[in-house]
Amino acid sequence: MNSLQVELPGLNLKNPVMPASGCFGFGREYSEFYDLNKLGAIIMKAATGEARFGNHTPRVAETASGMLNAIGLQNPGVESIIEHEVSFLRDYQTPVIANIAGSSLEEYEHVAHSFNETDHVAALELNISCPNVKEGGIQFGTDPVMAARVTDRVKQASNLPVYVKLSPNVSDITAMAKAVESAGADGLSMINTLTGMQIHLPSRKPLLANKTGGLSGPAIKPVAIRMIYEVRQHVSIPIIGMGGITTAEDVLEFLLAGANAVAIGTANFQNPFVCPEIIDALPETLKRYGFSSVQEVVGKGILT
Amino acid sequence: MKKEELIVKNSTEIALETYEMVLENSFISMTAKPGQFLHLLIHGHTLRRPISIASVDRDKNTVTILFKINGSGTKHLADYQIGSVINALGPAGNGFTLEPESSTILLIGGGIGVPPLYNLGKKLVDNQKKIISILGFQTKDYVFYEQEFKQLGETHIVTNDGSYGSQGFVTDVIGSIADFDTYYSCGPLPMLRAVSKELVHKNGYISLEERMGCGVGACFACVIPTDHNGGYRKICKDGPVFHHQEVNL
Image (cartoon, rainbow over the protein chains, first blue to last red):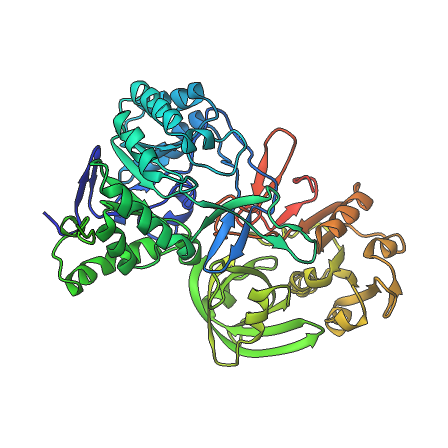
């Protein structure tokens, strides 16, 4: 087995690195920079039942070591994504994970069910944590009972493994993780963005049209590491870790905290080549810190 | 579009808070078209900054950008010294559509929206077009490239406070311009709205700016609606130039 290989439910990954949902569109733009076959997997931008336009602009703002975004789940709707985007990604030997969002249990079920018909989606990432739309699933992401309910319904509607993407905007993330594990989640994705705000001095108003946005980038990495470290000790399902990764060393840190694979988001905006560069740097980085495989690192940072 | 390193060959404050920077890179200079931009990585900043290309010198392998200090990113960019290297994605976006049958062209620029029109104007003069320019600035201290535009043709300067040229807005001058076939405009959104309203029956193109994320069309940060039914264009990828009827300002 190659040292970077990772086996997760539904996902046979040649390496643990995948672009995070919403930061990579549906792969087309980045395919002009490099061969998408290089990636461990691709997590597509969120799909909802119908097309969504999203929020007004400005939708992004820079912060210290990070950024705020409030895109508002803009997407062409699940049918269009299957017809135009999944069909494009079918040409690559890279597993595709479909991120699904909704504003009701029925919408989640519908979107999840729609991906059953496709032959090139390997898993679902259940987005119960988008902070940027009024009815965008955040109520499912902050209440363990609701989170378990939507996980259960999506599991029943889908024939694919389901990774539940957790929100950090909760006081007890372990309770959320345990609730969705009990409801049948095959894995976790964590963390989504932290809700934040920036006020623009010249106009004296919140800079983002949506007022609040999701904070991402290196600024949130310590929060992600802490949450994965905690959750890892209370659940047995795999974790796709994310939150501010920009280097292969960051990947190692996530693996040590208990992540089984990682996703890279904001860093793609700064450097479109960041995913392949991290993948290339991983073997040497593993070696430098005394490891021979990715699998060997997982959870090794946890003090017992 | 590629990820390239550009060498700072010159950097000058040419008007209040306004910098002209000459950058050397052969790929960028050989491929850049009027209206395209560079997505610049400024040290210490998470997000790149989109800055339009103001002119190209293919003999010297350089492009010139102009930017106004508008926040911490552009402030740091102004600190870059000659010889330093800037990473950029570019040339990004689509440039201005050139219309071979138009013979007289009106350029309408506002503030830091003026630079991409200079690159366009030079190209149009090379194509034997007659150019008329209206350039609007806040005050006298912010005026730049007046002589450069005068070399292209008839040029009107407008300042909001009347401290230089005529007083008012670019739209106050449009009515006095003799006939033209096509207009190109770049500037703040309120100006573009006023211009496209004033010239609603004319053929014209506008160049938009917006806070961007990826700059390559993946993140959906910089969209502009095209109708009231959810239609949209991405400013970074489909624009930044659009026909004035293509988007809802």
